[in-house]
Length: 297
Image 1 (spheres, one colour):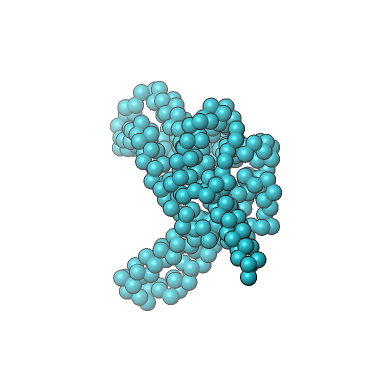
Image 2: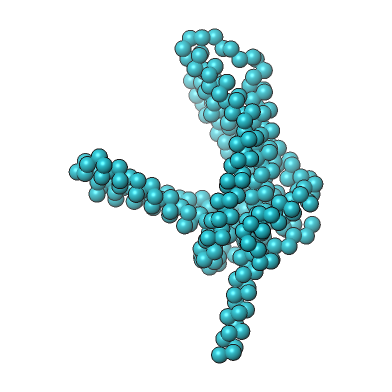
């Protein structure tokens, strides 16, 4: 399976070519990722069911706190582990470097991403503490509201400034066999210089994926509202009005819905792989033009 990513493309062309590539190679991708995708979908479905209001499950957790904690910990950690395997399988299908190597590299990418998130959260927390000292009770309610609004805007801008270039760093590290973390800041700078292309791609991709996911989520949303309505009635003393097979139906619907989501995520990953290839081509062309200009002068 050959993938031609080293070509100068617009962000819309990246979206189009990623779609066409997946349509042409859907069978190959499905064979390589369906097992981790199915397991991940089932694990996420379990996580979703645990977060739904359930009086019987709540009472059981109170009676068996340690067992409840252990079960939930196993499910949540298991979901995280399977998620790492899933994304490793997706990149392996794209680059063909082998599952073992992709697993090791994606694990490193995952840990670096966590470190970046921790730093961003710490910075936002520091800004919040500083604004609290500046504001506090000395200012009016309107002034404090304004300060809080500015805080939200600053944090959102900070996250976008840092996270958007990471959408270039991630596929570069996964697709480029020779990419090293010692060049992280160099690669991040390239991503920052191409921030607008990465942002516009992410924005358009989010709109497309959000609309598709909303439509696909309708059955799951109906089941969620049914569960919430039933549990509210039980809290007020009414008997349970859902059939006995409802938990199994919820699990199946959640699993199938999430499985479709994993397919959509493959499209998102392939789109940013194409964006990475386009940026690499532009950077290469830029260096060649600079070299030719220097030679002439």
